[in-house]
Image 1: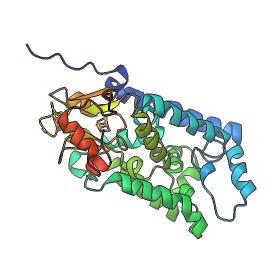
Image 2: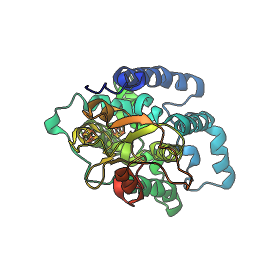
Image 3: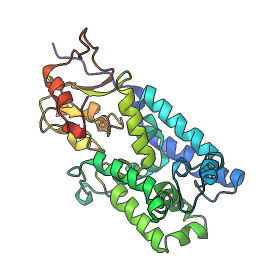
Length: 306
Ligand code: SF4
Ligand code: SF4
């Protein structure tokens, strides 16, 4: 008897309208509200979920701690994102973030022939290397990378450029060009549209750590290595190249969003959003042998695997 297909959750079945909703909800109306309510000209300031935890050039200790007060909405936003990820998974990044949503939706309009495949570059070392530089650069006098190369500042200005001269003028400055190039090459032209998210987003980097931590007890995208035939269909659609098939099939929880695109295309029902297998009396997981190998193999899927 043919096996019935895995029931895919509403959120992952309808991700495209949810991404659009995230962009509509969080980008134009809220960005205008920020301006009206806080005199900020964009996401910077009270709403920024990044700059309050960065030590910037010339700061005193009191100014650093005052950053938490100044960006109080950003603090609440980031803590909310991390807590929801810990218990529910990275639904902010995969379904709601207006920045990642814009680059991913935009990339779908670009011909496949023009797309750049970044999957040969291992994402976690780049991501956490950048996060470290991002946190330490101001101490070394290199300025604030968090503000200079921020896609949360660039992407809203892309929309704003149609309405305000100030936003348009931004893209005629060197920094504007540079940031536009980052958004174009790591976003719109990246296969899957999530290159910037996967390499350089500090919120994404912290969110990935929360996802990994929560994967011990929460639902995450899991790959059953015994069912997998290594057809490679999931690799083709994964926007964060989180799936490893070279050694043992596995999903890197430090990179999985979870968008659910792999779950939709897998002909073997080998991928599902679920909890990890229960641990046995000796503290070992009751996994399929292949998955157990993947989990104990340092570096497989860019980390310790499932
Ligand atoms: S689509 Fe399914 S069967 Fe094919 S490689 Fe991915 S997990 Fe394995
Ligand atoms: S592993 Fe699957 S759910 Fe995770 S990011 Fe890749 S395609 Fe999306």
